[in-house]
Image (cartoon, rainbow, N blue to C red; front, side):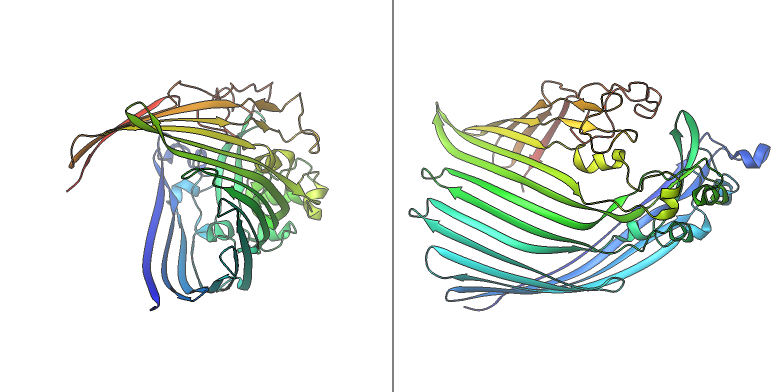
Length: 463
């Protein structure tokens, strides 16, 4: 058998340019315009892949390489947008914060699967990468599978390592935004990790994240066409890159206060390798296709995920920040990792087919989430004075497809059919929780959206 080759080339670019209308720069007084161009951001990349594969008797071999170029651009705004305190709501990107940075990396991988016999398979893989800005890395993986009971039952497992270099955005992005904080208007600066401001606070350069990943699972085929699987996973990430807490101080004796005063901002944030995390969970899948029901057939699919993510070990706060009584990564930011996403998600999908018509009804249960605020003890799971837990909800989606003929098809999708919303936000006197009454539903957790029922229809044409 000959080698199989696959070559691909891809390129993409996106950009965003900001405009601020009906505002002013107070430092310009009567000469201030009311429309500003505060600048913008742009990111692009191009990559080339080459993959080859061949089977030698009981061994399947794969080899490949990838070359990637990335470019991040921050464009400065017009002078009126950043002069003095800058335009209200979104001060422009200053010339010293404008960047045009590139990097490249090349990677090589090899993987091999070996069928010891009809029931046992083992696999090994390795990848080497070289980044123009972060050096080299070697990651590896090993996997195995054992089939029994005439292929109706199998056990599988894998162990691997991972590597992720900081994105160019995390390394170089910086801006100043006007925010509501403690009931007042304030300017918050995001400073890139290369800046003298961040360095003066004792924060080190960004480095790569590394991980160790383990999975163990079982798959079943109880009846012809039926399928079920249960998989456990455990992912440990070291030196995870996070967006810091708001660093601020009203104590004039602290270094933080002096830095904020010099920069003319009331708080600052940055990206840092601040925490180690451990994620563990279980995936369950049950697929029962083609159940005869009346004149048509019913497909049943159940998918469930149960997971938890926790921060492990101490969070090291540099001395200048600790001296100001500020945590580098407070309990509010910690909750984004640990409690702001559902730890349970269960989906029951029913799809009925009859001649040219198909109807699908998907019911998804999103588990509860908890939002923890910056004040309080970070070790507590719940703080009744400020925190709020949003209860689990079930969302139902209906999808109808009708194939009129070989050429035309009609589709109707109704998402959130029963118009379900999250629990309403209870700010409990915390001005920032609902931004002064601007939000009725939670905006700092990722449970599900609060747009209610949405309807979409389409017409497909095949030529």
